[in-house]
Image (cartoon, rainbow, N blue to C red; front, side, top):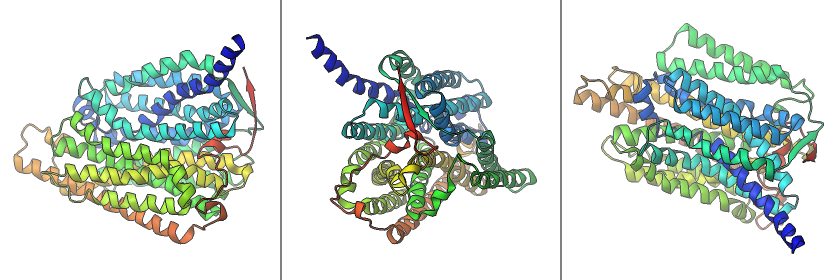
Length: 517
């Protein structure tokens, strides 16, 4: 009987460990989108400026995206479980600080802190997950659940946020992570084992600083150019950021263990896969953010009503993520990527009939159709990127694929959100820099309010057209550029490793992994 209990426990432990790991995974992805419906309330409570509001939203994604690869390397050297425990603790502290932030500056700082912590969680969780499931088939099933949870986090973030905001104050959207963190810290040491990799390579501090600094300087300059118009400071900041990023790119070519291996982009399949990781997330984050404002501030819906309207799109996205690997085995990766981009393009265009007086049905249809493409992109991007390169470079390819998702999420709000802000500034009543600030003016006349709403909807439509055209263009490129390889034939019995399995070594090529208790 004792042996039977021991056998049952040994079979159950990996799945319990997976359940524990999925908590931080959901938090990392959900925290990138949970504020979309909360921003009107945050704007009323803290009165951030237009660019501060955008930083509140996207500093988290920039922190995660710019540090994801380097924390993968740190985990290789010092232990993934140890890094998971530290990251989860810092994530909880940052979330608590954000919930009670008295001003926009402190909220931005706390969001940046949670972003840094979030960058420690995803790659380490993948490596620990691989240790839990040595059997290839069960590991593939576990990684599929992992990928679906990651996708679902992005989708349900606004819904969770909207539900909480219907009952509590805006800070509640940050406190939701604390119970998950507590459960993880209690059970992770019991269910999970330490994972280290040998030969992880040296971390280049200058690459870390220039990649993060160049990205932030560039986006900061773009934000101010769109919000304040042409002036010397934002132009100089943008040029400095581009220069730093150029230096970073050139430096990677001469390092034995580069932070990002840019030579991988010589492969057109890999390049299209990475762009597919970035562009859909950029479109999704920008339109979700702008649509949240549209539903609440233009159509005057409650935050809970707006959250419920996002349910169909979230359901389609999650289901698409789960079933895509099976479908890809039948139709091939090329067909899946083409469907991905054209469904997103078509779904986004359905937002064009929205007006200042109505458009709920168009919004629901848009999120459902585009959700199909978003789900496909989550499922196939990393797998396609890893499959396009030699096995010894699979870790670096997987790390770049993951990073493209996070950077896309942040860039969508930063660049496309700034484009919408620019159009509002040019076409609106010029009484305040944002729609919510304009509508809160005590002496606002009805004609000015209607003008402000019309200008906002115009900005939303322009963003929709731009992103739709980009997806249609990338779909066309995929149609003509992507080869139909033997492993991509429908019905091929080539074994798939799963979209994220190969990225456990994250950024430093192929490593042997050492497990310790």
